[in-house]
Length: 478
Image (cartoon, rainbow, N blue to C red):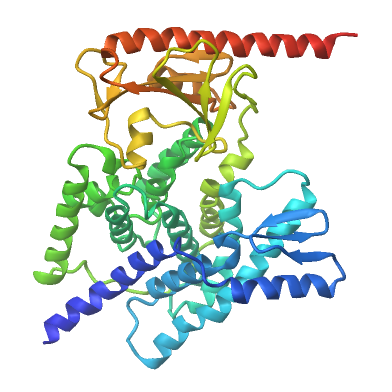
């Protein structure tokens, strides 16, 4: 019985944190508390405010009231962080009181987050914050309130705050990924990775060398806008991660599985769950837990404290990089001569005059400054599996349709994703537009479809350039 309780005691925090991270993007029921508090406080300052249901107006500003604003996600993230910080504490009444204290803390933190958002929009009007900056506002207010849930420890406050900021940033990055393809496996991989993250008593030279490489990787991710790498980058922070875990077979697999696109590789999800099962079996069934941690009091020098403070600031990069390293603004719209219908995901269904019958074109704008994924990955996120056609490597099929992709970026028509990635690697480059052509596979062969879409894409490109040239001519006309 005691062994069963030990297994439950070890797995319960992991299960709760994984579950809360997934629940954080669920339907929000917290609006009834947060919304009247926000509008009531604003009204006290005699600022015109109105509740429109899906948004609130504050003076000249219109603030969409999303699930983030309502605050349930911030509540469950605070609960997840509190549970994680207290995972080694005894299950007594004070333990649960400390965790449940995050409910009123989340209400206050969320109100402060909404006011930060309003202040930002007023200061930079008419611009709005990027999605990453929006998440940063939540993280900014999550950390000080999560500090209230930290258990007592003889360790120096500097080390404990550093670990708190790290775990809060990881969980904030994890939450939006939990319902992607392979999201549950990714969530478990992140939580097991976190269980091997701890600031050591002394920072060795090898960790400092690894830290330099880690910083170099951050520079590459910022300028190349490789946003999908931020979560694994955070997990393997050299000042926190355990090299023995990362370079073990099961640890290496689960570290790779923290990348959101890893699950899209063949057999990757199966391999991930085998590694998870092995770790659970080894740690809780065979009773081979990780070596026990000790909590000595280490007096960090001012140099070490400065280093930890600097790296703590770097933990904010995933949330601020897209705002700091803004790419070139390239406003591309379908040509005016096209018949346009909106489709979900900031896209358009285009029909050009004289276009080939039976061939559809979908135009997708980029999400912020993020680079477009390949056609195969884009549709896999929508539950559609694609494979290259046997006759033409440029053409993909789902079994009943042919699909072909192009990109409009930096004034060029780009015929493949590899060329597109190379074109967008230049710092400050625009993410451009993703063009997807689709037809019924019974209408023509893959090679015929490839040839026809090449001509159609060329015609679309010429039409856009022609309209752009005419627009510039009218602007410059005296």
